[in-house]
Image (cartoon, rainbow, N blue to C red; front, side, top):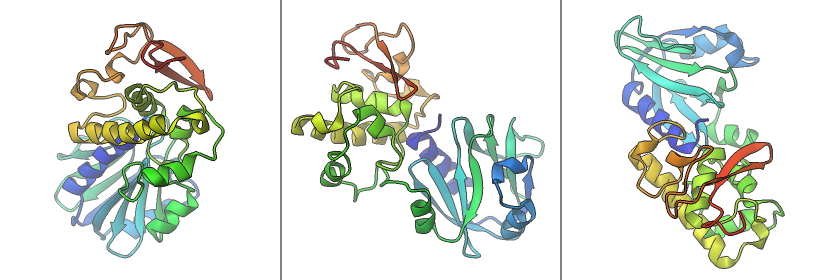
Length: 268
């Protein structure tokens, strides 16, 4: 499931390989990924144009088109973005491909077809229409903003972290890591956290996500790049806590499977 660190990686792929290149052709292999947007309208908006800026908000990636619109990409649970440098190198499950004039292609892949590629007139309006909360790594989203966002909620802290309308970018996998590093029980109600716990939550949220981005570790790939003492490489049934060695506990929260340490996260 691509989360903020993954999508930040996709943003870097796009920025490095696609900006300021003329899009010669747009190939849509499965129109379902566009939703109600007609293939012809989508292709004509991009063919002959250039992408001039890349922006990420939570799990969404956007690229400004020099004609004024924005290309929007959401990856769902199994999407990705790859640069293909040679003809015929299209990866499996490519749903949309952007061919650049004489300089490779950008392939949007999605194995499960849960995701969306589209167009938006304005990035800020798109974020509002998607009802996204502040990006988890937005510098304007400080500790006071976090308190304002969560303290009126009477829900477990893991579900709050995963709620894209509260904080955009964190999913099931990185919420486990953040809560592990903060030593907080995932099922604890967020409005019952002490001031010290809430501060640790904010600090570790920033630290974990920034570390993953810096080390280019995703939610399921390149976990070996994470520092020693991180939960994710052991996040499996029968996995052991990297801190104390206890067998990790498996939880079901809101229909999602989570992992925690019963010793380090008291009450887990």
